[in-house]
Image (cartoon, rainbow, N blue to C red):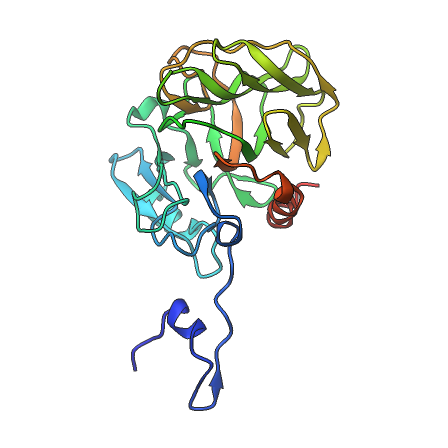
Length: 291
């Protein structure tokens, strides 16, 4: 007998007396319209592709890694592919799309020496029990497409000993930064900035603790939250530079200013999701158990 996929089963009330439960709803099924979305879990039932593409550094072969039956990153497939070699992510596939692998706004790194790591030669890298993409040098980073506007952002990461640029998103038309996140270890601050058309900071929220896994969210170009609570301070103080492409993990003009960190989820909206930010934060925290 042929198997029923989840979508088919969810639309059938009864077959020969058997009752099928509804297909699970993922975060982006409810809160639609993301401009880009990357995670170590499934976020969107309409995205049918892989989670990431992984290269093992022994033979430099690459393969697409999907999700397991529970919607988690398929860590067993990563271990099988990499064996005793280290594993690096060449693409973190965007799950905001309706379609298969490569249909979204993918975060990509074609230079092997700049690829973030996911497997250490014996096990998948984790943070708080969940897989984590590890940025381990000053140049580990992803590039992604530019986005015209950014209004609402959620991301889960863990800062390391060396921190600077985390996310920079420029405007497609003007090449000016529209959203910017940076860290500094020296004064223990995390900055979330919304620059104006000349790359001067209009709003710069910052919090004063950089240790441990955290959820940062920001919306409406003026409000930033750490683990569900408003940032401790607000004020001008971190000015981004002109950029050339959108990045995760390094300054967008290709210069250094990279970060050592773990990243587990990034969701970018170009529309206002401020009314739902608490509910979205709760969903993310329920999965990652951050706070």
